[in-house]
Length: 130
Image 1 (cartoon, rainbow, N blue to C red):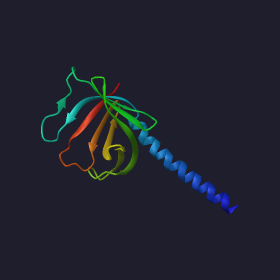
Image 2 (cartoon, rainbow, N blue to C red):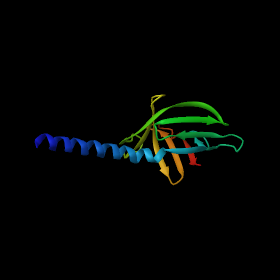
Image 3 (cartoon, rainbow, N blue to C red):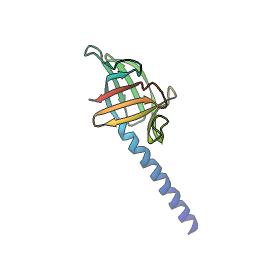
Image 4 (cartoon, rainbow, N blue to C red):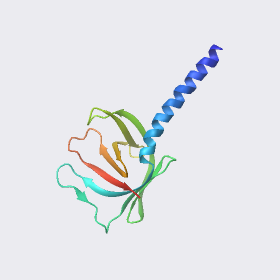
C-alpha cells in the first residue's frame, strides 16, 4: 500500500510538472513571421515587405529559421518557467538548445516577442503568427 501511494504521488508530481511546461510550449508552437527588431539603442526596425524572416517552431521540439524561403538554421528548443531577471516576475523562457541561448517570451494575441533575459538595453524581436 505504501509503495502504491509513493508511486501515485510521484506520478502526479511528474504529470503536474509536464503540464506546466506544456502551457509554456503552447505559447511558441506555430509558424511566425518576423515583423520588428528592437535594438534598445535606436529606433524600432520594421522588416521591409521585400524581406521575409520565418520561424517555424514544431511540437516535436525542433525549429527552423528561414530568410526569403531559404533555410538558414535549425535546431532543438524547450520552454521552461523561471523568475526573469529583467522584470523580477515569473515568466516563460524559450531555450535554443542548439545555440545554448535563453530568451524571455512575451505572447500577446497573435504576437510573439523574444527578449534576452537580463539584457539592459531592451533589445528583442517581434513575430506575428501566420
